[in-house]
Length: 128
Image (cartoon, rainbow, N blue to C red; front, side, top):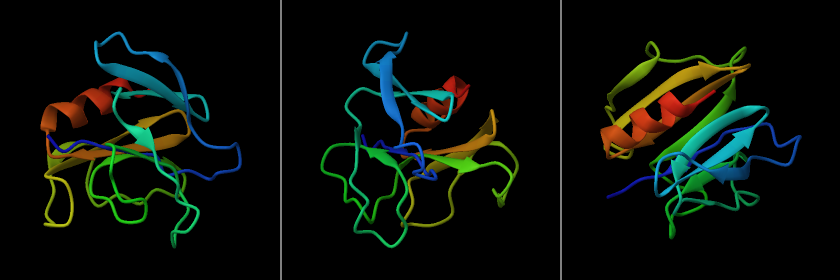
């Protein structure tokens, strides 16, 4: 199963951090700018310092730091310009994970993508 988490953020607070175990077995909770999101416990933070766009990414082990296809991202909701309404939908690009979607939480838009639709749903439903 290909799964991942993207966290796109401003980096001014040092990024997201693990804040505890999720109520779901095999998952953990991360937090960024007051927004908590549950992700699979195997996902890890990637080093993006050498990438064109430096934003936070949590993804499965062995994911490429600058070129990844699945994960969860945090966008400032004031500047987030989505191509579709909140919720989960099948993605259109072959370079992306099969499912993607977003929700709003606090001042952020949380975007998740994965080949497993249930993983995307769980990540987005946990955002708050």
